[in-house]
Image (cartoon, helix red, strand yellow):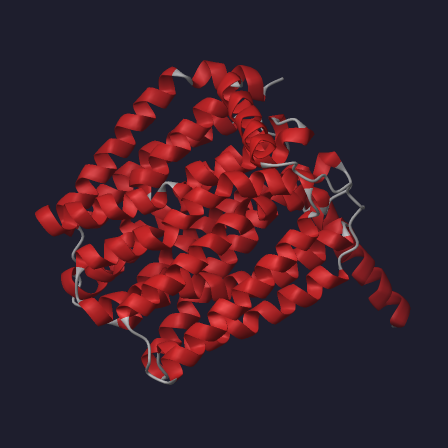
Length: 423
């Protein structure tokens, strides 16, 4: 029996490693497991708890947009410099620093909500701190993935599985958050977030990565030169430049439904925190489906067409969601929105990480993060302003239309991207 069980276990492992080869590597398994739990708490806080608390405290769509802007603006400012640090310092140590600072901010939110001392201004200040941490975290998180996998042939699978992890966290976090808000209160969401950092810290400590030479920056001039060098590289690399421009548009208008989610949940769909949780979970479910598809792919050939189709579908989904007045239909639409969003974002990531030179990986991925997430504060502000002036429905119609126009432009650039991705 023991021999049979061992053979069965080996067969399952062989099948798993055949289809998901990145899981062969111990460091990647540790990273994947620890970050899955940690990011579920992070997404619970960022995607559900803070927006719901802001709207509950202010009852203002405009202030909701302002809060989103304030949260992500520090991310925009810090991301480029984080990319430089990622190229020159230990990514493992940087990721550990993020976890320690993150648990401190989350603990502060937990204490303030349990003691009823939380106010809108205090929430804005802590949102700024969260934004700073996200700016430091994103380039490091993207670049360390390839460092946890020794075989370059498994990189694309590792990148896709990293997206699976993030999407799974996006499903788990808001879903659990909605239950906690409805049954216990927002303070327990922050408590969960605090506790979720512990597995991440332990798994990072257990990772054994190759030593990297620590290169210090001699001053502001050296830092700016390195930043400019990365910017020139991106501008001169046609395929990467075109993909980043498309991601920038998606960050500005393609994510606008997230900023306005509390308005649709409470005002347009006449729901509550549970409705908000259902809506917040729908898109990540679609994202997870997209990631499963991408994790089964080998190489990056054809991904440029995936980016184009996804961009069109995102615009159509936003317009459809804005016109829906049924919770069930809205959830279905958001599943498709999440699916096509992650198809675009992860396909872009896979192409860029495959093409980029290793010595510039951190800086290029900082521009990727800047285009993907750093533009969201302006998108939040745009969505909140449009919703305040013309209504949330019209705001999403405008954003969806701009997304489709961007896809039409990208279609004219498709041959250029294809030439690079097929090399």
